[in-house]
Image (cartoon, rainbow, N blue to C red; front, side, top):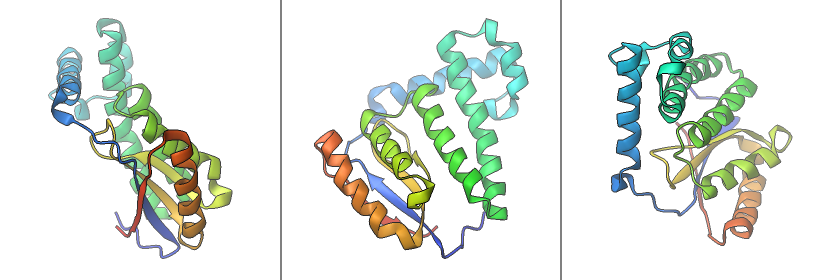
Length: 180
């Protein structure tokens, strides 16, 4: 998906919280997704629809249901975000980024308080301040968040995050900019 608009940049915020993917959390979620796919009768959750998931909800453990809900809805969000990028529909892309983060936080449960703080700060800055959207990235349980931002407001956004994040977490973030 092309993301070549020079008025946009990707601000990466490393929470400097180390994540441990070998501790079982990631493997447990994978197993839960496989369980959901089996109950739904599909080879993988990418082959399931939201309607299939809702029809099978009563057969799924509530946690397994939430894991599957995240994966299935994330696939839809990703497809919609790709189309939003193609069309330059940045408000929609931003909304999808936030929705993705909250699904990762609430349904997949791989966020952490520090990642949530970064997203909260980004939302507080908002579109008026140049933040289009923000979400955690990677395997979760720490690590980085990515924010799609207006290039001309990058310095003020970075300064605000660098100021607010340590106040709320007592951790210094590492910020850097990337072009996809």
